[in-house]
Every structure is written in C-alpha cells, then in structure tokens.
Length: 157
Image (cartoon, rainbow, N blue to C red; front, side, top):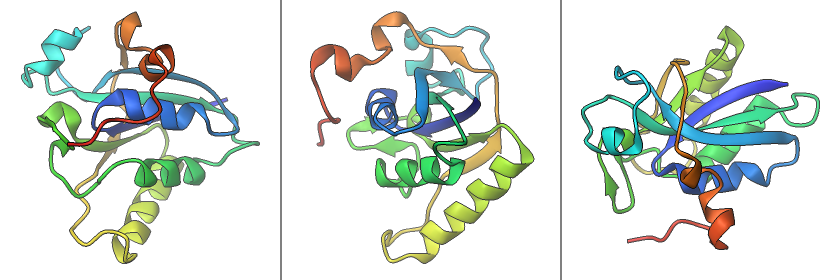
C-alpha cells in the first residue's frame, strides 16, 4: 500500500470523492502542514496553527496510480483560489499536495503543470506542493462525515 495526502478546502467533500475511487483502500481526514502538535478542529479553525484540512488516502498502486489520484484532486476543488473553497475561507482551506516521496513530488509538479496549461482553469493554480508533514487525524465525528449523513457533495455558496 501507498499513501497520498491532499488539501482541497473542507476535508469532508474531498474524502468522499476519494472513498469511491477503485484501488483506494482507506481514507482519513485530518490536519497537516502546521506547527501545533495534535491540534483539534477548533484549534485549526482559528487559522493560527498553520494546518490545512487534508485527506490522507491509502491506495494500492497496482490498482490506481498516484497520477489518477491527482486527477481526482483537480476535478474536485478549485485550485485557483488562495486559502478558499466556496464559502470556506482561511489558510486551513488551502489547496495543497503533501508528497511522500521524490516520485510523488515529480508527479505532482508535472500534473500541476498540465492542469495549468489546460483550458480548464482560467486563473493561475495556487496549489502548494510540499513534503509530507505530520498527519494529525481529525476527531471521529469528521471521519466519513458525508457518508454518515447521506450527503454526496459539498454545498456551494
């Protein structure tokens, strides 16, 4: 198994998207990229911890490629809005790829370049690509939040 970590705004919706990808064997939402050890949701919401809301994806590379997971990321959020997704605003909602190997870094950079060169996005992509930071699992009530409530996607607005 391999691991990928992505930030795409609110972690509930992006987790739901990855849960349905063939070859994904597990997902967990949490926080990465900050300075506070073991932050809570309330800590992260202040915007002072430096963490992003993220989904950590466990996957079988024999069944789904990291590049395919990057395609899911691009398709399920707006990577052109700095620290914002829909109505959610703050650094914790930033677009981010936390790579776990040099190969993931190279694939993420190439994928970002392809997305930027495509006609899909009319503004510059602001997604950060950084080395994987410690992952802090979010509270249980956040795990598979949409599935627990029968929701299929984030509300817009």
